[in-house]
Image 1 (tube, rainbow, N blue to C red):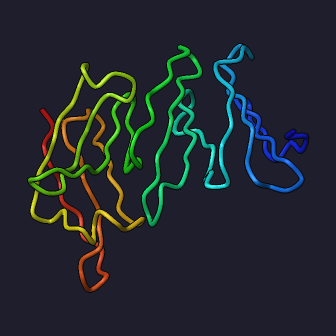
Image 2: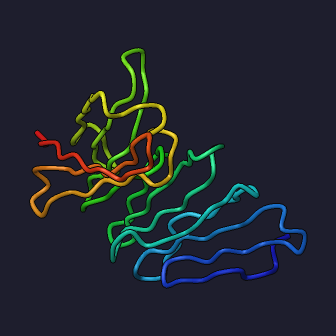
Length: 165
């Protein structure tokens, strides 16, 4: 059903049909063994290596929001489906979440939130920041701090650093 090889990397293959109504993918570990295969809708965005052993499959969730599934191709670990990634460092990743208190930056372990999960509420995390795709997060070398860069109402990019526990 998906005979056209659209894209291939050392740890994945992405196939489509001639009608491009969806995709079929295969994810391999570093030894060439299949970790997972499955189907993606037309909302598929990308397959990319986040670092030398971490591969991410992203799909559009509507507007500027997307979801991602992450694969550790060295240790054969697979994440749950996660919200849009703002930044990654080792097994930690940052993303925005919302609840009754508003928008929060969350830093958690990609593969097991019980290993590390930390929420950062801040007034700078407005709906406009939450819904833009230009927002990024960078961890320092020791993962002790995270710097979020986001646009203001005027479009100017500003950065704010938060300590991690």
